[in-house]
Image (cartoon, rainbow, N blue to C red; front, side, top):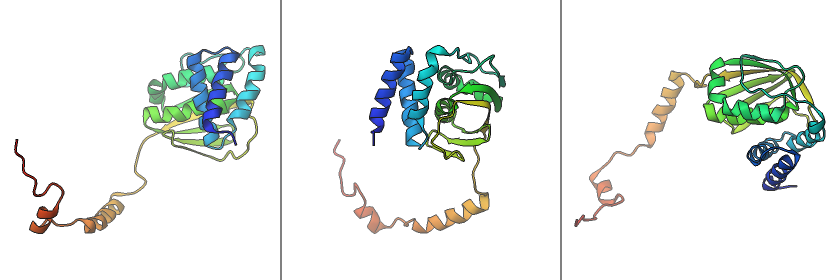
Length: 202
């Protein structure tokens, strides 16, 4: 099994070799490493994408709006870089739609990282596939295939408001239980606690 470090380094170099800058190449290396860590086929998709990259006229989303639609297909890397850079502004849309993005798995790794940047979970629906990004810590999905996804007709994103999964009563009950671990301070504890008996001579 290839190490995640080896995956990141090789993808970074391959991305530079295909014509992207070193800065973008480093980001793509991190992203494919992330996909592989979460069990998604990053290597398969990036390898196939680079086979057609130079012979295809992919477009870029330079500035995101609530609805984004190209004449052909969007580049998942350049569009992903811009999505990450604009994530604080884009999150104010709450919901947005992207049509016709090539190799969308490469794009969603940027969405995962954006979830951490904005501090919100992001729900993404890609045709019939669903993904939930949790602050770049995990990706929940109904997509279990390890196959290449060459395109997506439509992606819908929603930035979810942070809220507890429990109510106030449940929290209060648990907090009261936790209070049983508190130890009341006594003279004996004061004498044996850390720092006890030390004299400050300054």
